[in-house]
Length: 211
Image (cartoon, rainbow, N blue to C red; front, top):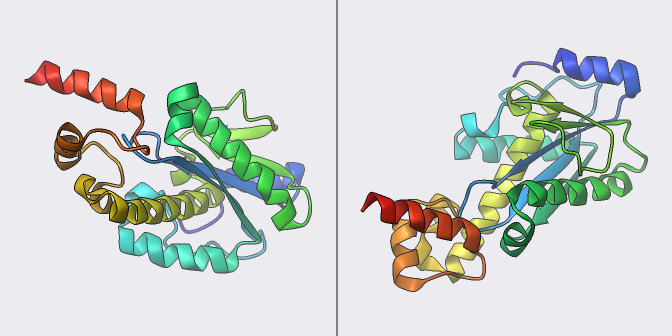
């Protein structure tokens, strides 16, 4: 992603310069929270070379870019929804909750109210703020891509830390996704407090059907 997108330039012309990019990571794993990042990048600086959808980047590239993004950002905030909250309200509403928590923290860090919110994916009815949603926005919009990278690095670090407490599940490698090693550990050791019980039950039904 070599530059700010036309979408972002149009939003700045319409609403003002402080556009918040928001993205989340962790919808699909069997364990761990959903983590959302809200970020305001300076509109008068060129886009950081190499910034793209975090899924398209190596871990090493994400780590390097996250340092640059943090150094350039006007404000960054995070929100999360726990595995227990995912089970209680479902993954869609947990994602919106994580985003709301991130957005609630951005204004104090920015020092003023942001002008508009730009979100990856489809519109969230429960987000609580007026926003523009862009499907595959993490590959189309610079601010969302920045949020995507920082959110991914942050969640991965969290799962690596949890892996030291629960080494059997190999979260340092799978960050909570349902790999065969993760599934084998579930069969042998059962659920941890960080597992999404609803996801694990669905995965077990699928696994049983294949055996």
